[in-house]
Length: 149
Image (spheres, rainbow, N blue to C red):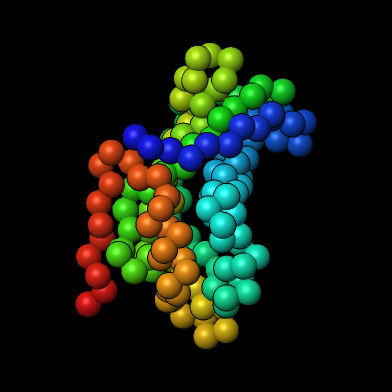
């Protein structure tokens, strides 16, 4: 599987009273990785907003496998699992890997989303997004979603 990845050190603000990373922080790191990927592929979230669009999520599913603790180094991966050819709908898969345990998977996050026109508040796409997203890493079982009908 091709992936994009970012490395993070878990900080104090990420912890819960049980002394492991709060459940919602897993999703925060996944979102940060998606935003970074767009930027690293030369289309930042600020540029997407300037073009009049923003991401909207329909579903976000997190599966937890191992605890993550304070000051651990984690790698968060990101790859497309599905997308319409016009880039208007998409799904990403993230894995959070514990660096100190030979990349053992701590969590898996799947998100399904689309592009929201920030003025009309309707779903859509623009060519710049499609061209960038076509270059993103894709999972081994990536599939093209049917065009809208």
